[in-house]
Image 1: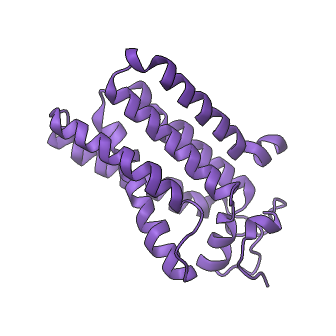
Image 2: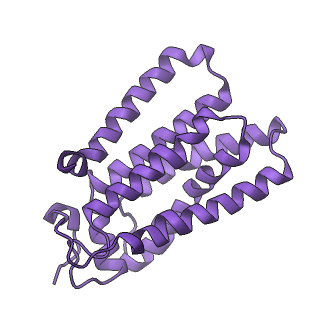
Image 3: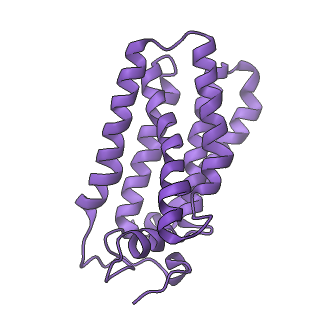
Length: 208
C-alpha cells in the first residue's frame, strides 16, 4: 500500500502511455466514440499526474489556500485520501464508460466533470491563490476541453443523445462531484493522519 500511495500518479501516467500506444495500434478497428472515451480516460490520468506529481502541489493549494489548514501537510486532504478518491475517479468513473460507449449518459458525467474542472482550477482556485495557474489547469485546457468538445460534437451530430441521456448524465455528474469530491474529502479527512504531503507538494504557499 505504501508503494501505491507514493507512486499512483506515476502508475497512472504509465497506464496513459500504454493506452495511447493501444489507440495508435488499434485506431483503424476502433469506433470514433470509443476512441474519444479512451482519450478522456487518458485526460484524467494526465490531470492527476499534474496535480500530485509534476508540478504536483495540489495538496498545498487545497489545504493551505482553500482550507487555510493548521495542519496543511495532511489535513483535510492527505496522500491516503487523495489516492483513494482519485483512483475511484479514474478507474471507475472515467474508465467505466469506455466499456459501455453506447450508454451515453454514463460518459456525459465525466465529460461534464472535465468542463467543471475549469471552473474549479481556472477560476475558483486561481482567484483564491491570486495566480494564473495551479496544478490541473494545463490538463483541463489541453485535454479535457478539446476531448469533451469532440465528444459533445460527435453525439449531437450523430443524434446519439436523448433528452433522458442529458438529464441522467447531468444528475449523475452532480452526484459524482458531491460524493467523490465534496463528501469524499470530508469522509476521509483525518487530523491525526500519519500520511503527509512532501514539502514539494506544498508548493509555493507558506506553511505555518
